[in-house]
Every structure is written in C-alpha cells, then in structure tokens.
Length: 123
Length: 123
DNA sequence: TGTTTGTTATATAATAATTAGCACAGGAAA
DNA sequence: TTTCCTGTGCTAATTATTATATAACAAACA
Image (tube, rainbow over all chains, first blue to last red; front, top):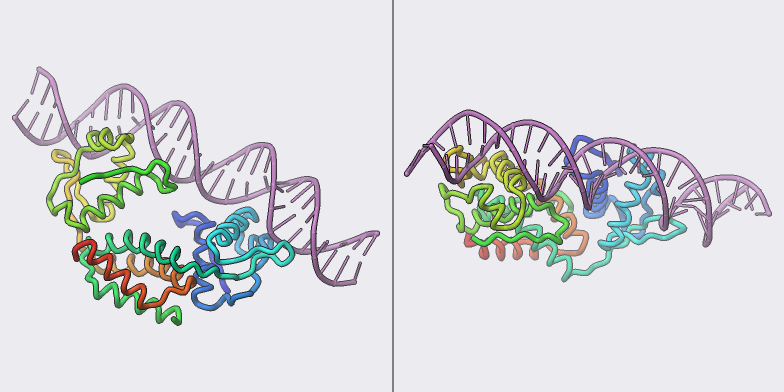
C-alpha cells in the first residue's frame, strides 16, 4: 500500500499516518493478521522519523486497530468494540454534520455521501 | 446560548469555540444576522483570553460562518458555498467512516446515526 | 469627549510535534 | 555463539502551536 505524507498539511504527520493506515484497513488493502512495516523501515520509506511512526503505531494499538508484537512488529488486529465505536462515530459525525447543516446540505445529500463512501470502500 | 470550555480537553480552546458556535448555528440558537458577543466580552464570560476568541472569530469568518463588522463585531452570516461544503463534508466523512467500517459498523447504522443527529439538530 | 469595536503588535510561557542519537533486551537466523 | 533486526526506552534539541498578558491604534457612535 502506498503511504504518502503531506508535509504542507496542517495535520500532524502521526495523525496523517494513523488515518492512512485505518483507510488501508477499511479498504481491505491491509488484511487482518497482516504485518505492517517496521517503524524504522516505514520511517525511511516515507521520509520521517522513526519515533513519529512509533507514535502512530502506539495510537493505533491503543485505539484497537493493531497489536504490537515485540518479535514481529505491528500486526493488523481490529478490536471490535462496537458500542465504543458507535459512540465515537456519533461524536465525530455531530461535528461534521453541524458544519454541513449550516451550509445548507440536506439530510438526503448526506445519506448519498455516506453511500458513495461505503461503495468506494467496498462495503 | 451557553458556551462552555473544557480545559481538560485535548482540543484547542479556539477549536472548541468554533465548534460550539457552529453547533449553535446548526441548532438555530444563533440566527442569521444575529450579533455575537464582542471578543472581550465573550473572553471574560468563558474565562479565556481575548486573542483566543479573536482567533476563533477569524476562522469562522474565513470559513464563511460570520462576517466581521468593525462597528458591530461578529455577525452570523453563513456563506452558502454548497460545492465547497460538499467537498469538505466528503473528506471529513471519509475519515470518520473509515474508522467506523473497520469497527464493523454497517452502512445502515451510519444512516441511523445521521438521521438521529439531523433530528436532534431540528433539521 | 468618552466608550466600545476590531485590529495589530510585542512579549512570554507552556505544550505539542518532530527529529536525532544512543542503548537495551528479546527473538531469529547465520 | 555471533549477527541482525525488532520494539522500546531514554535524553536532548528544535520548531510549531497554543494561550496569555499588555498595550496601543483607528473607526464608529452616543
């Protein structure tokens, strides 16, 4: 999977990295049990520091997307805590939809967007 | 409208303030043409610095939620650029839904959440 | 003339983000 | 055993961001 950093973005590198890996899992480019590159390897590939990659991996572990094995590094292992995930989705959506509503985007337009994204991700 | 800051949050104060004001617009607690408190006044009310409020107002202006009048301060004035807003909603939703999909949240569960939020906001 | 408005400037402090380098223990493979 | 790679831990330095504190300014207005 291609991972690219936007060094001009206002989003922190470790946040970008987390999002891209999560995107990779959602689109099945990363499969359950698959091994991610080592922190040093990925750091060199995308041109950032080892510790920044390590920070991203640690966050992904805390949020239940990977497990970290001392021997094999980070392994895709999604922890399905649906209640927690639903609560988080609710919070995140509330912020996004408030903006959308202000701008006159209708409920149906959001539903269409959701379908479009789910189709894009292959759900 | 009550505006409250969470000083223990990991979100910056000016971001919290932006989100709350946008929420206020979405829920019609702030009406088009209505005047927001002055930067000094709001700063004192919620116990933060004037410049932090000013930063939030400036961002809201740049994103097209208020207009700033030297005489009357910040005034709710939503700029309805739907194409831009749809593009932004698409990006934001892509990140949120990727997380949700990984956690096994179905398309229908997201649709239900969207309806719930739109109802909550009175849309 | 005062007062309030946003704006601008400067300074300071605290925190977060990023990079760098080094060292360690555990496991795997030569 | 030796070598190599793994994540991890630590310290340090730098830069960017966030937040605060003061102060001054011009515009608008009663």
